Length: 302
Image (cartoon, rainbow, N blue to C red; front, side):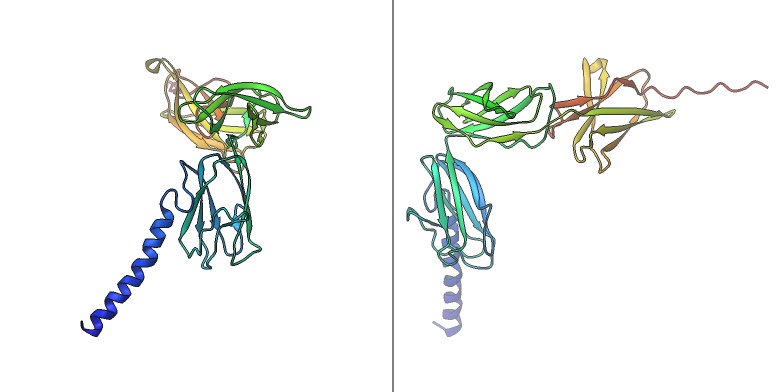
C-alpha cells in the first residue's frame, strides 16, 4: 500500500478504538449491569458531584466524566472498577441489595463518593404545600406491585403515621397528604425505611384586583408571604366549560407579583390560584372577582 493510505488507515483505527470503548461504556449494564435507570453522577475536575446519591435496589447508577482529566470509579470493596474514563466517557453499575457503597478514583484518591441503596424512596418535593390542602407526595419502590407503603410524618414530636400508598405496576406510588405544618416525611414498607424528605407548608394569601377597560381587563396579583418564582393561574368560570377553567399561567416576579391581561367579558367571574409547578395542585386562592368591561359614561346632553 501507499504510505499515505497506510497512515490514513492507522489514524481511522486509532479513532475507532476509543469510540468503540466509549460506546461500550455507555451501554446499559456497562461495568455492572442494571434493570432500571437511576441517578447520574458528574465526575468533575477533583470531585464527584453529588458525592452521595440515593438509588433503588436494582437501579443502574451512571457516572459521566465531565472533566478534562481522566478518572476512575472504583469500589472500595473491589466489586467493580470502571478503568480510566476520559472526557465524555461514562460508566454504569447496578446495586442489587440495600446498603451504603463507597467508591473512589484510583488516579486521585482524595476523590470519594457513596451510593446509598434502598428498597423505597420518596421524591424530594419541588414546591411548598398549602396548609390544609391536599398535597401529593410521590415515591419509588423496588417492591412488588400492590405492596403497601406507610407514610410517616415528624413535625417535632417523632414519626407518626400520616398516609398510606400502594405500589403500582411501574414501581411508583403517590400518597395524598393534607399537611397543616412543615414536617419531615419518610416511607416505610416492612423493614425498609426511606431517607426523610422535607415538606414546607406555607399559608399564603392571594390578593387580586382588576383594572377594567372598554375592551380588556388587567388582573394584578400579589401573594404574601413572598413566593418569587411560584406559579399562579388565572381561572374563569365559563358556562360552556361547565365550571372553572384555567386561562393563563404566570410565574411570580421578584416582588411576588404577577399581571394578567384578558379580553373583558361581561359578568364573567374570575379568580387567581397559587399552585405547585404543575399548575393544578392548589395552595391558595384569591376571592372571586369580575372581569366585566368598564361601563361607558353617558354623554352629556347639550
